[in-house]
Image 1: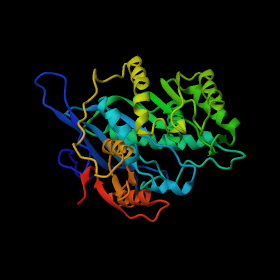
Image 2: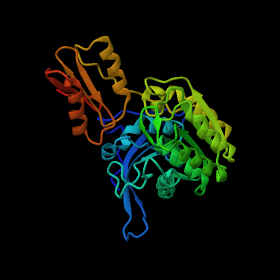
Image 3: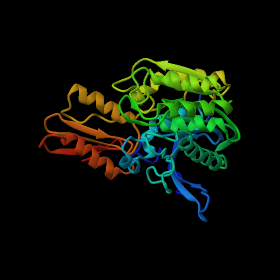
Image 4: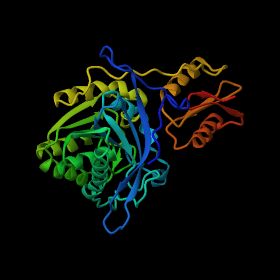
Length: 374
């Protein structure tokens, strides 16, 4: 395991400060650590390793675990480019609530080892139920490993997922690992090949019904009105199948979000929308850990000169995002930025690409991980 990285010593990353409300208590901070999680696989003598990122309160106290689970891109070629840093803001949101938040890339995603295990077969006859259980097995393996860490408290933990990761989370509740106290699913499902189209809807509905037959873990299901992966016509069929079969479901539909509500959980601006929904659910299930969130202090970094008002507002959003990130500008107010990349160099190249896209202008990187570049 790599040495722990302290955020106050890494000026290249977002500065995250925790101010404890109790008088006389030491001020602590959030910490992050990229780790590799060993996972056993039948038929293999050596464990596989999953790429993961941990964000947690650094107050010397063990905290309950929250496993955050990513989705699956429509284009298979994009699975290898995924990074746990993409869910940095979401991990921070749960760490601020007192959880040890871990984002783990399942087998076949990002830099995790192992073959992709979540294929559902042909669109004409998809086996969604088996595909989601494969993802659920990785979630359970992550929880087993993390439960052995000294900074994770024993007992209750939660699983939080988006899209395919939410679908795997629903499957997890049907055969829950020990101490799984609750689950949160943002836009769960599989089989979206193009916007507003899902192959094998009947099989997808049947999979949710199958999980509901044995699921007793409290489950929060959040769906936006304008989700273009699993839309307002299909979602009631899926959620009702799960609940009518016996699943312990709390369903919340939100108003339309952006151009595609499927990204409500994964877009930073969506956090303020889903946070109160999650907080009510946690409180209702006696899982609220703090009376107030851990405070965050953002770095005091001046926006690059020459940006338009829109560019300056975008730069603020950039500062609030997590590593690895870069911001590039041109001489004519064009800009491009990126976040959640696996490395600084990847972030630099992506930011330059966005800045120059469709033009012949020259751009330069002016900020990397909140540090100005001379």
